[in-house]
Image 1 (cartoon, rainbow over the protein chains, first blue to last red):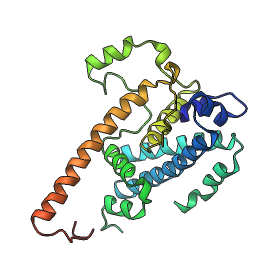
Image 2 (cartoon, rainbow over the protein chains, first blue to last red):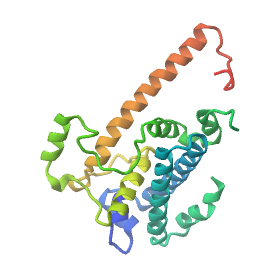
Image 3 (tube, rainbow over the protein chains, first blue to last red):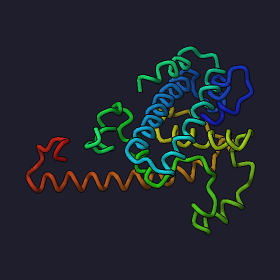
Length: 94
Length: 140
């Protein structure tokens, strides 16, 4: 569903994907919100992993996570959903 | 901090609802698995790869964009897929929504998860058998 949201060209990607999967918009919104929390936690894990085992693979993985994070942040901010945007404001809490 | 194990540190930090998913993610990190490279014959047994190649391309949900964006999209969807989504009974899925990359990824994730359940059950069993059921996380 995330990939569908990221791909959607609709003016309301969350609503469009929710309709496509026959779920409520709120359900998809909540899922995205929890998913972003989980993503931030996983991103933090890669930072901790790098601190523990500073090797080429971990550094590369960290780079990929940073790249994906920027991509996600751009896409989510493009949805104009303040509650989701705020997740990235609070990301320093992780 | 340097004396703490990554597992213990993360279990303390991880919120309760993410615990199991975080452990699966950690296991995957050991083999550099969540990165966004596409699955190919290096990952998938050849017999499966032949099957994969023969699958109707319309069933492969891709993401159009630069190679970097495609990698990011794969990485994001794989990580997000580790977090269980509350499905609804009348939720529908059509052919266009089948994602082969995620299907292969989730197959490995489920295998890891069931192996981890087995390992943790074995540890717990041994703790009970050795009368150390009151062990705390420090001695676990």
